[in-house]
Length: 228
Image (cartoon, rainbow, N blue to C red; front, side, top):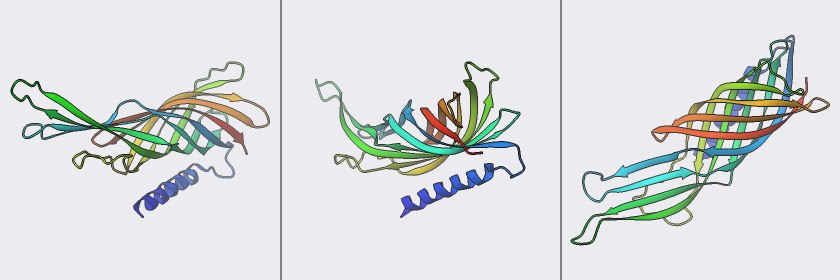
């Protein structure tokens, strides 16, 4: 029930974003809808937590997020004459995995040197992202292509399944949760025909979760359709 509630909250947030950026009827604006897909590539460990470091047997759990296919869509509002645009979009990762290791430090016993024993586990995981971005033109054009930079913010919702194999009861498993964060990136818009254009973008989504900074690089392309 909690997962359904969070999904509804994300959907409501995204709808509110769309309503917020929707322009008045009298404004000189352009409106486009688009679908986006690409690759989400986290760059660091998701978390690394030590237990019993000063007393008892030292153990630690390390989790890292794998790369995954991501897809979604959004709406763009452009203010003609300025080149500035506002985008609101939602993305979702598919068939993602967390690689989790649970390690124990075995101390020296007489003439046997200390050693480390590690168990490995795979955990299915998906992530929903929503964001609002301000897009600023660079005033450069090459064969009609327009480079830009973008900054913005939004949120991420992490959802984890059960380990594929039973994990040690002392291992620290990831938990579902929502967090706010910021976006920054750059891209290029390439006009096609009939109100269609392509958008190719690289950006990073930075949040704070599990007590550390989480950085996801997103490399994607979008097909945009101007409807107004």
